[in-house]
Image (cartoon, rainbow, N blue to C red):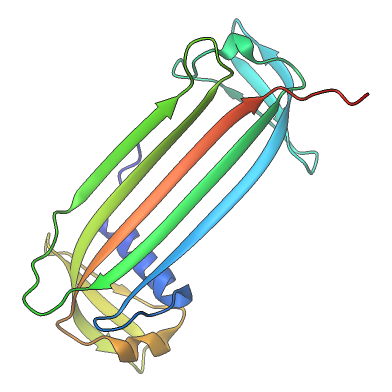
Length: 190
């Protein structure tokens, strides 16, 4: 599992300020991205667990399916593999006197039951607290200091949103990422 650091999550703050809409007092915003794609199994070697997939644009990728991929024997050439990816960044300015929530990373995983076609999903949610320590409107940047004492300067894609926050504002950044994969048998057309 990838560890998401303060700098990465705070960097996502810059992205979310770029695309999200602001809510009422105190300001908060959220952005989300959903990507769905499919590929067809072109080759599979059950003994080595090597799988070759062909994407909709004709591109191919070969990889070794880990032992965590349950029921690989159910996969056959011609099966369709569907992928889904969800990513969300939510930023909330805390009210005066409101305590920071607990921080950290949590993860969850689900996979197919024995005998079913392989399928699974894995998701992580990372919560980071920071305080805005500087806003430079001329440079169009904001500096955020995490609870760990580290500071990061970010450049939002929509710097006019910096007018809606101030030095001293305490923010909570929640980054959520989910990847899901499912193998489906393709019905042959008659």
